[in-house]
Every structure is written in C-alpha cells, then in structure tokens.
Length: 383
Image 1: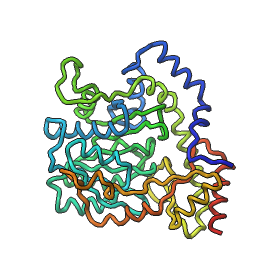
Image 2: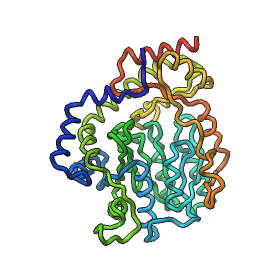
Image 3: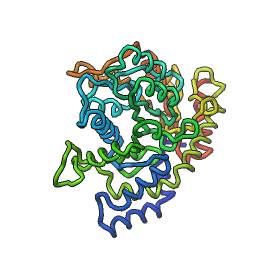
Image 4: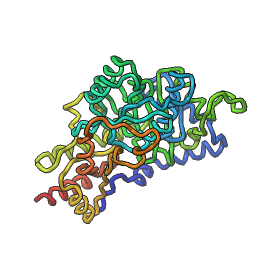
C-alpha cells in the first residue's frame, strides 16, 4: 500500500464537476483580475472567520508582508518600519514568517517555543518585553500544524505592553482558540491558499483578514501598486492580487472545509489512540487538553529515532515529511545582515524539535485502511 502525506488528486477528483464549473464561469466572464469571485470570496471568508474585512492577496507570504507594511503605515504614516523596530516571532516556522519582517524594514526577534505545542511560548514573549518593549512593534504568533497558539496569554501581554498582534494562520484555516476563529484576535490575520493548505487553490494565493478599517484599506492599496486609482498612486505598493480563477476554485472548496477538517480530526484521534502506548513517541498535544479546535494541517509526532523511522516508513511506501529540519535562527538569511535577527535566550526547544519532529500522512479523504497501515508499520518499527 502507498500512503502519501496528502492526496490532492483524490481530493480534487471528489469535487471535479464543481471545479470545472468554476473554470467555465471565469472563462465565460473573462474577468481574470479582481473579478466578482474575488469579492465574493473575501465576503465569505470574512464571514466565516468573523472579521469585518478580508483582502485577497497573491500569496500567503505577501499577506504577511502587506499586513506588516499596513501596520507600519498605521503607526508611522509610511509603509516601512525603522531599522531599530522589532517584531517578535517564533524560530520554528517556515521562512516566510520572518523574511517578511526583514522585507518590511524591521528586525525579527526569535523567542523560544513550547516543546509540546510547538508554538511560541507567551512566557518567553513577556520575558523579552520586560526589558525591550520600547523597540517592539508587534508579535507574529504562528498557529503551527493547525494548532492554535495560546491567544489568551499573547493578547494579554500585547495589550499590557501596547503592541500589535498579526496572526500567521497559514496552517490553521478554520482552527479555533476557545470559541473564536484564528485570524480574528490580532489587528490582522494572514491566510495562505497554497495548494496543500486546508483551503488550497491551484497555485499561490492568500488573504489578509482584519477588523481594522485602516489596515484593510492600506492592504487593498498595497496589492494594487499603492493606489486607489491605479494611474495616480500614493504609496509604494506591490502587484499582489488574488486572481479570479483561484478565487473561483476557493469558493467551491470553502463549503467543504469544515467537513475536511473534521475528517482530519478523526484520523488524528486514531493516531492518538493507537500510538499512545509507544513510549518512544511524543504525540501532538491532544485538543481535549487545551481550549482549541485544531485542524491538523500536519499530524506531527516527536521521536528520537526520527531519521531511522522515516527511512523505514519510506521502504513501506509511507510518505512522511520533516517540518522543519532547520530552525530559522540557524539559517544564513537571518545572520550577519545589516539588520540581523535578534535571538532571545538559548532557543533550545526549537533546536530540539528540529531533530525529532516527523509529520505523518493525514489527508481529508484518507481511508481507514491507509491509517491502519501507517499505524501498524510504526508499531512494527518499534517492536
């Protein structure tokens, strides 16, 4: 049996007729840039998450970058930060979370994660702010693997120190902290519609969601070269529009997101139950122990013999992936620059998990037989 980590062909074949209908609609209208489907998607996503505004962007990376630049505009009246400004984030994430900070003019500050949730530790944020709050303008928590950060702790700290929060929701579309959707806590939430995401397009795509009118207006201008009138621009912008074809596909897929997320939670529960007796494996924090509704973008375990297990499963034709093998503070990009990243503390948890994490197959349409096969092969390895 072959078990991919994600079977997009199977997923899309299950709604093929609706996808073709989306193609036909765009083809007949010929409005490929900012057609009506983009506005419809913005309205439905903002309603789904519970924000007042949503702005479709060309990618999740650009969503982060434009949200940061809009925040700078809100603070300074210009679309780039001062070089001494700092943005706190996690070192255990994809590079886009932090390289967009550099691109916005500020410097990332890496503070360590909790080794069991894999998310940024609010206590470490507070410790850093206790002595460095004057330079910090924002916090970017990443809801990694589809599990919510501790938003109570983060928002309380942000309020106390008078700084903003921009949520990286790239891996957690539809997830919740308590009864509130992720992306609706900070001044902005940044979504990714990369094909492998919970709500994925057929290419790149992203969105900024917000309750702040200024942020929404500036992001809208930034995505269109910096102007409300494209022939009379007022700020330094980008060409970063979510195109109509991607929006039309996302509209078709959006109505299945809750069902697909629930399917993944059921698969995760099987993993939790069947693998719980293996002492050498640390399972993801079960959602019944935290006030969260996870979406399991990845089902990620920790195991000391990670490389050996991965090689064994590969022989059994089970695909696994390591997210992420190198912590950001160890990457060349963030060291030795004119405005290098700051590192707070040892970041030992981040460094530890890079050596141990392994993501198992978790597909919205994964069969019971596939899940059982993965479980049995993992058990076989540890016998």
